[in-house]
Image 1 (cartoon, rainbow, N blue to C red):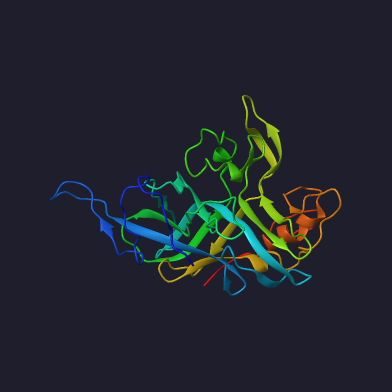
Image 2: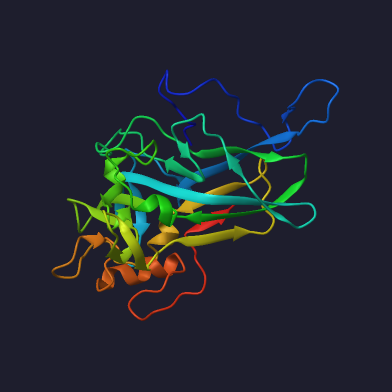
Length: 291
């Protein structure tokens, strides 16, 4: 998996911790009590089954038709990251704001590098989230949300801070952002199959944006034994599309799924995310795992 590349001049120098607790930063004058902070890195990766995801590759045997898949794009937002300490308490990870990949409690993960047929993306990639926890603790447990928090979701992307300024990941003020953008060519849909996840059935707010959404479509993910530095969060494309037909599209709907509430091609994909769709309820997601 390619490591993160960032544009020169957009970030200050900082080091990624090899494991939690490797770096303790002290604050306050010498001789006074100071608050220590752990630098924490949560590592992510994209795979297609057991194979690393990469633009320019073609994967075999996906979905119910066991089709081929050649990537066009794979980006997603995660937010509200928490880790569990040795006392069993969930603690909010204070994200590093000195990077264009993170803003407030939100981070963008980018697994495409604009090579091959990924021409709509960027050359820079990102496969980690970095932040801090107050004090020194042993950690075993991870919880986060796949998606953009409501308060950040319905803003103007043209004036939004990075990484919310990615117009390729934005629908409009009412619908908000594409929490997941996954695209590629299959044997049956050579011009492109797509999966765009976001909020739907949103009510307009005064002055723009939304006041509420019937379907938030955010996915809460929790791993009981996750340890930063030892474990990695895996987004598995093969698991996401396992029960979907990637070679055909229902008439008068997008080629794939754009989160439409009446699009039957979305039902199996939502099921893999543990989200209800089309009267079908799934209790457990299979798209995201840890290793």
